[in-house]
Image (tube, rainbow, N blue to C red; front, side):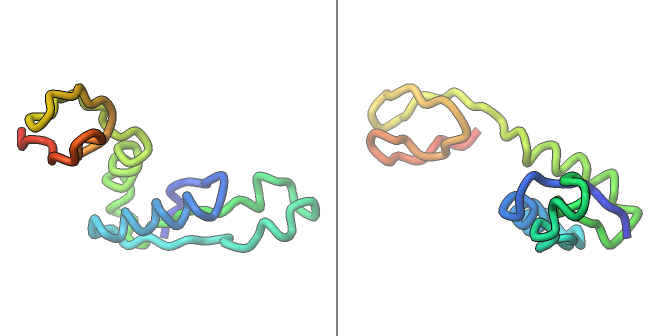
Length: 102
């Protein structure tokens, strides 16, 4: 087992671990409730962490986590209403039309 990353909160840690698991990488959350002892320990020692079960998947997990933390910014024009859409959206905010396939 190898530690992949510390997260600032439990919600992000759980989200990242779930996304890695969904991608086929065994991931678990460690120190999930250690924030309750912050002050007894240095704050950085009480942050939740994502750990990878298979050491050989560590580099793949790092790459995937980097992609998850920085989603692609897309620019596309809605084929339904012509609205310009920016960001990671896959559906037009104005009319609900799905983003066209690339």
